[in-house]
Image 1: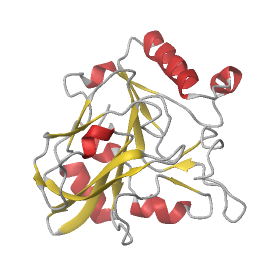
Image 2: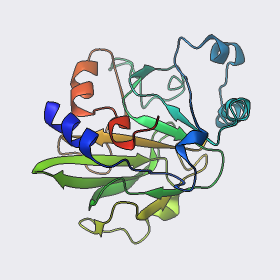
Image 3: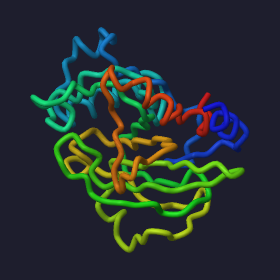
Length: 225
């Protein structure tokens, strides 16, 4: 873990969405179970969350809201992807979300190759997803980009090289994006555990220690102030 932390900290910051928007116009957003203001609003649909997030952006004179790493949330309760009779509830978010209520280009965080891609189309899932493979100083890891537009998967090929800052996708809208308010789920993954086109972005309390090790904080790379 120290190796990946060192690599990410030493790497020049990367923007993965709407790169014309300066970090000065980003605002931290709390969607956790401890947010009493969110609990009072009781958002239930993608449209409810769009309104809530837009109000947050307006109140903070911001254009992008970000946050969610290691955050316990209630918003997954509507989906059987995160809870069924045979599994522990998964409600702890292990990526970083970048919320913007408009169409937006998505960029590769680093030089790399396309590892895999697919449309994870269940309610509450990622929707269209792209995963890139990176090697820096001999260390292999991956970046995942979820909640994309369906067109983002067109003409993609496993193994294609992409450069840092190259547009690889565009942001998806509900219901194609898993039926969420528009946002990019960005995640760093060390070991893909032989998965392709998908990797858990939400975990249970029982598996949290593993996922925090395998999925370090994406802001180590993005470096949002």
